[in-house]
Length: 305
Image (cartoon, one colour):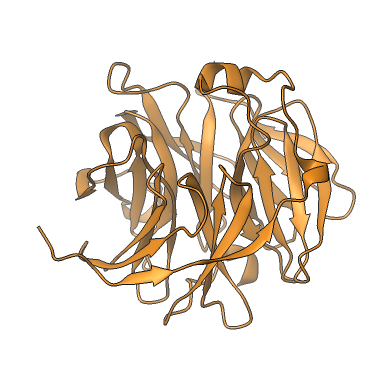
């Protein structure tokens, strides 16, 4: 056990305008979640090279674009359930859609294409989040409805050359995913076991080493969700339903607790701002983007390399 880490306060960066909020619109995602109707559910924040913040709305199949001035617009809308969102270095975005698989969007026209909708000749369970490696490989989690009573979630890698590798299976709710600074370890948030797994990546796409548990969390009605890394290798973990983002050192020691000033349903996060030292956090209960200042810049994303 560790002493409670210092608390970092947040503030509301921007709130979703009322004109974008919906209620009662039928959604399979809402029905399966079993928590009643929602006006939206913000997830998957990611910045483009111009400093615009994009995020998804899971139940209503939307991507929002938020300018540096805080102006909201709908970038794309379709019959899907988007969750994770990342930018490729050529500017197009890739979305992990629970219903449709890996999708790509043209940054100018918002034209959508299905990049991948099944692996190993079978359908995905339901994709959740993704991260790019420096070589253009994309790693993504396949959560579906996996849980402790159905620990069948999977972790995949789509190589830049097109080959697909299943890296690990048997996870109870694989969710957020991020690479360490050296990109030889893959961190995966296992929501239903309330912990962070670490998957050693062998060189030259030779598979994985011995998978182990890196951090065991406690509390929260759900578990860990989105994750991010800073330039020193510190790991930031959203504890969904707990109104918290934990900051851990690369050794797993808690060094910060970033507390929501709005609702408890923090979901995902991304570094941004002029010096890349501002952490932006999606909070789904109130439909807001929070922000907090940190002393270390976020790890440069593949899209900005």
